[in-house]
Image (cartoon, rainbow, N blue to C red; front, top):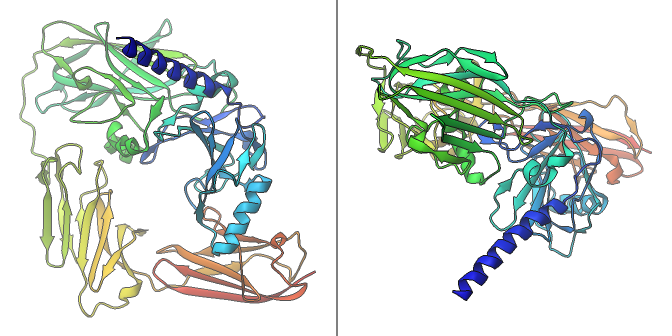
Length: 556
């Protein structure tokens, strides 16, 4: 018994210690913390893993280590987090910094050295603990706009080092550093019939609930229903002096006063992000560009963000009693909006509904479809629910419905090319939407071409025989050590695959920004000869078409 008590006491002390040590983190930037993106915010195909600070919407402000630690990972990518930095701290947590314009001095030298050793721009490094130690307050980087960033900002994360779970920085470290006295914004509340027999306000379709604000609470007219229903909400949050439409922190529903469904954006694992498209109304998002967060679960949704779920959030309206449904929406600073929706039973007469078009798909089964040289297959639980799919085989491709259902696993598409198919090396399987073509990495084995995808749509063989386009944007022929060499590169079909630059046949570092289509070499790297130099740039697209640019430049 004593051992059990000691173990419980130690566990509580450790939890208390971790909760308090994380508050020792200082803010990573010294300018006002203006939030442009919140933790868990709904993004394309994922929950936002950190918090974005606008940093006055400009590049170059320094980033400071919030606590002692060591740099344990560095990743440089044209996409995603761009120039990213990972710092492992002594208190059991790791902080992550994304979209950097540059690294701090010692880190920058370390990174630049490895660029030239590896002869590549994109790379991932794992420094030893002794190589790049940092002290609290050290400058570790500078705010930028690299990778998939939509504007200058700092993407900041806190992770549990052991579990790699991502934590909400506003909850665990920075709540007091951000000013927020503004309530979340309610953009719309929606009600769904969840069975074929359900009728709501004499309709079998989902619709937006009309709301009126009375004494700081939103109220709807009484909903009349029969069967099983669920609710969804479109909402966002704002902070003082911030222009962003950010995600909310917590959603709680109540049925007749009892907590019914609760979502809290405080911590999640990376593996959970794949469930984002089932958490929202994916079809509505594809049609409107707006996200409804569903306050119910149709079948299964293993999200740790969901803390409470009675009856999976589904509400049975059967005449046993009148129902009062309430939604509360919170931000981290406990600003709240409340919505109240009365529900009454109405004995609607059931009317037979038309059969949906397409082939019925049981989401719990495996499927294979094939016609001539094209096949498509997927495993059980690839979809989140039963669906009806329109599947049509076309020449060297197929129409696989349209992108309105969320997938949690990959669908496999295979196309066998005819023996005499031209330009096989420059051919890939692409998603075709009118004149818009999306490239997919295609696994090729002789005439057997395959891709994996989580998107429904039209897939066909696409051939790209056009070379990448290269423009040298510098207008001068003479340069100094403080100048940059700037190119614009573009490939309109398969996209840029590789690029390499050389001065006098020696490899030079080129930094690529796909958003502006520019690649830049800093002459301050001092890889030139004083006087005349031969500059060469080699660019290839993703199916092997090549363009080479060459010019003589003078550097004084």
